[in-house]
Image (cartoon, rainbow, N blue to C red; front, side, top):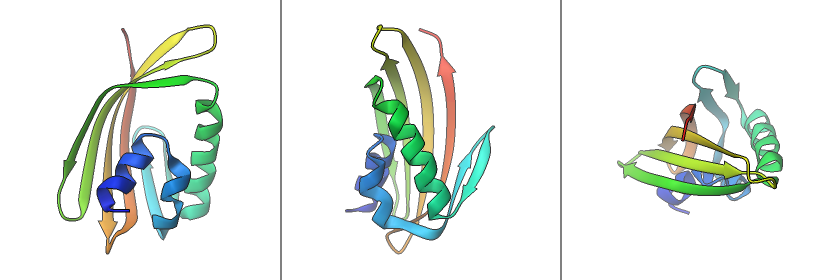
Length: 115
């Protein structure tokens, strides 16, 4: 996968396809929440998120990708609907930093937004 494909897959919640591209020392900065370090912590967080995402339908209302040689930034707006059609929206901006094609760092800004 290219670095853009890796970043897009991660932002579209296709986490498992990105696992082979995670640096052993990867850091995920979840701004306003926590910092996760290492593949084990990142994969555990992704698997927890994936379990929740199986209970909702996700629609990407916006998905903007900006790329440079070693960095990808994805700005997205998502709507999540549960089985009772209760909806929530989240705006996210994820900055992916790569070293030699391997994902070394992610910085994520996420906020819930009103309709």
